[in-house]
Each structure stands twice: as C-alpha cells, then as structure tokens.
Image (cartoon, rainbow, N blue to C red):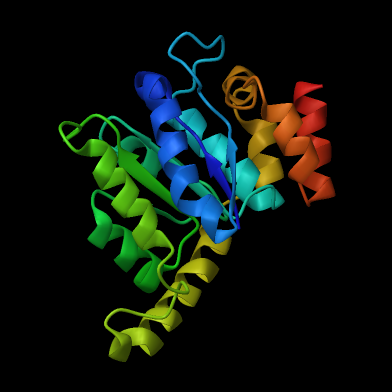
Length: 212
C-alpha cells in the first residue's frame, strides 16, 4: 500500500514526528509512505485544511496513493474537506478503537487525526497505536463480524451515492478558484511524488496543465 501523509499549516511543525512514527509502523509491513508536507511551519506553500481535501482527492482519484493520512487541530476540518470530494471516504480517528473500526466497518481511504486537541503526554504513543490498528487485519471484514454483510452492502451503497452527488474530479479542479488549487498542489515535493506515482493520464494531464 502507498500511503500519503499530509499536514496542514497549523500542525506543520509536527510533520517530522508524525512521519517518523508512521514509517516506523508501516514500513516493516511492506507499505510505502510519501510525505507531501507541510514539512515545517515555515514552508513557502501554506496548506489549509480545505486544500488538504483538494490534494487528497487528486492523489486518491489518480491512484498516486491508496490511503491518505492527514489531520488538523481537531481533525474535523480535514475530515469534512476530504469528504467534500469524489472518490474520498475519510474517517475522523481519535484513538486506536476508531482506527480499527473505521477499517472494518467503513473501509474508507483516508483518515483525519486531531494533531492539537488532546495532544499531550503520550501523544506519540497514541499515534503509534492508531497506525498499528489500521493494519492488524484486512480492511472491510466488518465489526462485529456478524455485521459484516450489511456493513459491506452499506459501504457499496455509499460509494454509489458519492458517484452521483459529487462532480468529476477533473471538472472540480478546472472550476475551483485557481489560486486555491495551485496552493494545494504547490508543495515542495508534489511534482516529484505525484508525477512518478499517478496512474490516471486524464488527471495527470489536468494537473500538468494547471501547475505546469
């Protein structure tokens, strides 16, 4: 699995710790982490939580990643922004139980974490345990297991609903405020990571047209 890590501006100073903790859990399992920043609070491009939604949608819809791990102060804004876009199903994860149940019940492709609220003594341990619970089992098996069939059915229904209620991602990118999009895709390593891993030529062409 290719995992994209995205931090917004208010929590950018924690990127190094979050990335190190994430890699420590997932790399021994054979997963790859692409760190899209922000890398420090002083980065030139300042990602807002709204722009996290744009960047997450581009990465997931293009196949440049399989899972987005992101967040903001409370995690709520990042979650809402991500779920505003097609092809993104983002859960709000506060603790390891949330992480496990999201993978089993909702089987989404993004999680939003609170990187300020409740961030205190042992915060890095909570992060580690959350990341561990994301990968202890195959996703979508249901919880409790006797609820697996209706939960899997509801997930498929939600996916179909989102196809109807959301516009095509290329249409969205072409019609959103240009500066908002350019800021979302303007990270220092975006071109390097995205151009190498994007699997959708149509989205790739749109992004190249937008950012050069």
